[in-house]
Image (cartoon, rainbow, N blue to C red):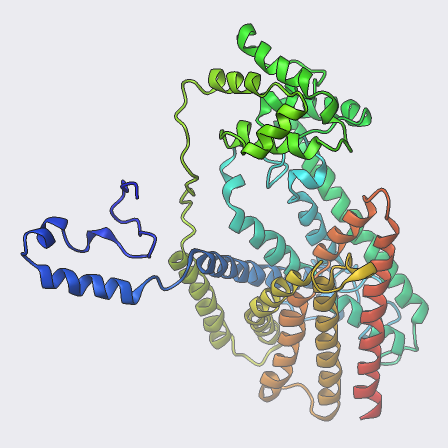
Length: 526
């Protein structure tokens, strides 16, 4: 075993070397102590594995992001129409401040196509498109966040990327309340009659605007990327012609090789001509294998990834494949010796410590929950303002379980269904259906309760819990941002774009029918 430079690093068994000096054991001094300490280390071991720590850290940050997403969704809904629907319930808005552009199907007025969470769904879908990775936007370089420069420190914060996309955007957008509003409109509420045609248009408009916002966000990401990365923008333009000619582009390669090997029509950095001739000989010997669909393309890609990225010799099988195809692998080795002559050889990969420790993540989550429970205890008045704010806080408390369940269900995408339907994102579909069921059930039960007992302070924990379950848990369990990103990916598939429309119909029709049946049974039958 090679010696470790850091005495605090755990060994392969999870214990530390600094328990007892080695000289103490050899000299007989402290021998029993040494055995006792070693026994304690071997028996105790690490509390969590690295994989478990990574999961818990991601869950903590995602929970915090879900709280912000849920809270901001309510704020946006209030700003765009809630104060118009229930005047005097939003204390931080004066009578002339709200933008009365949304209304839902639960009121006595005709309308509701522009449902309450319509603006939040648009905003969340836009942010989701803005946060796309480079491979999703067909950029020349695969980077986690397309609109940032490749060497920006935020590119390494993958935990925060997941928290923003899945936690914040997934909780800011919601399919459950959108679907519930349309179902209530189809039945008719208050003094209104059934508005089936309006509800159908509500589904169409909601879907189109979310898709449009997602597409606009992705375009903005590309525009920002091109502005701050002019060299990569030139490379992207040069890639178009080469791709049309059927040339495969390996985006994982370093900048120079990624541009030189496919012979892109652009200016590239200068190198020693004798050394560059080695890379030229490698390119010429492999020119036929760089075509999309070539049987040897996979072997070529593995060799270049191994030598140019990992800087290791390829396996004997890969070397034999290169020799059988007449590829000048010795020339590629000479190029690597020239390019990395002054750089130390990397032995393994070491993760950078960006401060995302389990202890820090748990403290942040604990502080957030403490503030929410404190706010729930402090804001306890019986006026409309207090009830509104308590509901907002209560919903934020319910937000993390919904977002985490959706994240867990996403593992079913591509792994649940088989055969011709294996392409369906089953996890997202299940999350949206389950959340829609919970949301419409809470709305129907609240309607039955308020018909018997008028809403009051004593009934807040009943009605408030139903609203928190509907807005917080179900609202964060369902998502529009992930839904439209999946639909957009299907639309970009050149051979099977119709899958996008099938997926839309399966999701919206399933949520509508199941929710409509439940709402009718609870409100009109029982």
